[in-house]
Amino acid sequence: MVLTPSAIDFVTPLTLATLSKNRVYSDFTEDKDTGEWTNHVELGLWGDLMLIAPISANTLSKLASGACDNFLMATFLSAKCPVMIAPAMDLDMYSNAATQDNISILKKRAIQVLDSPSGELASGLSGKGRMEEPEEIGMAVEEFFTKKEPLKGKIALVTAGPTYENIDPVRFIGNYSSGKMGFAIAERLAEKGAQVTLVSGPSSLSPIHPNIKIIRVTSALEMKAACEAVFTSTHYTIMAAAVADYRPENSSDQKIKREKKGEFSINLIPNPDIIKALGIKKSKDQFLLGFALETNNALENAKKKIDSKNLDAIVLNSLEDEGAGFGVDTNKISIIDSDNKITRFELKSKSDVALDIVDFIITRTIT
Ligand code: CTP
Image 1 (cartoon, protein in one colour):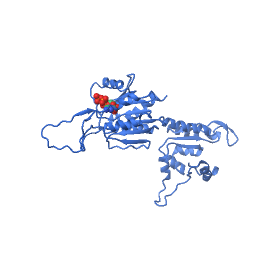
Image 2: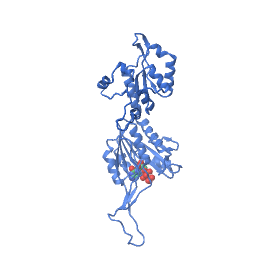
Image 3: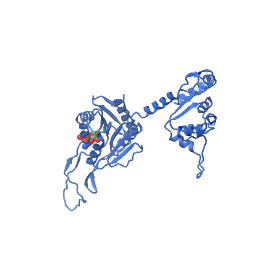
Image 4: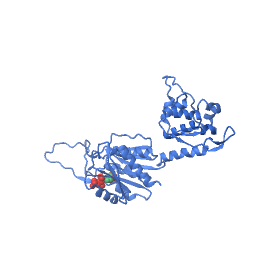
């Protein structure tokens, strides 16, 4: 909480801190060891939303002009998060053209202004200028976070990366998947409020968001076990991993020597289809999204996979498109749903593609 010098005339920092059980800032503080005084920057970066309530005509004009003569203004100018304000002043001050111009400037800068209702004012006069009722402000804040985190309370499972199927302790059968797509989807889901379990095959990436729990696996069998352990409690499952379809029937505990001359063959046996196994167990409240990486007859093959694996939708990655596929930072996808409706997207960064996928899921499942 931040109090301006004028606000301290109404309520002391100690009173507000005691009643709200929060730390109250009203001035710049200096770090005794380093001499730095950057707490306004830290607060500005830390916040998810900055609410200034009540905001006087004076502070409102400073917001519009960018003046920086107190701690609140320094925090406002440092803030990276959205800002919401609830003006409170006398009716003539509120209706004054200068104040109204300032309000429209702030609205243009995407600051959410909670309109002043009419009613009794501190001056004894009656009119527009009162601060919006605290309950209404609380609801606006709640709505902001619900919109920002539509997946709050939802549990998601994401797979990413390749699988490595051991031949011996130093060799494996694998593929070029980097894990970028699955990791990006996990980040976007977590940013929208979901609690995510990310089951990843060998990948150099690490998740950033604290709501992502990573389980690192190597082989398809390990990936299947990790997914099955959490699947029943998930609302959303997104299988972006490039799972090896086959594994060596026998993997040697020791390095295979070159002593045998001539040909050498490895007998491969099929790996389980993880997503298909989950599709069989899926309940009607669970959403299962697969990926299809195709080099030819892309659409037709992707549609077949929806049916054979009991999916709600499939993301088609076609290697026929330039800039799509393994290793690169971009992707061009289409999403096909179980009614065969196709949504096509432009070539984008994998991070933006992940957002399209997560937004698609939200529109399909949250009304
Ligand atoms: N998948 C899986 N388990 C496997 C193989 C694939 O869970 N053993 C999942 C992938 O994560 C992806 C979807 O199934 O979400 C489709 O993967 P893909 O490799 O395109 O399909 P396959 O069924 O393996 O078909 P094919 O290789 O013949 O195209």
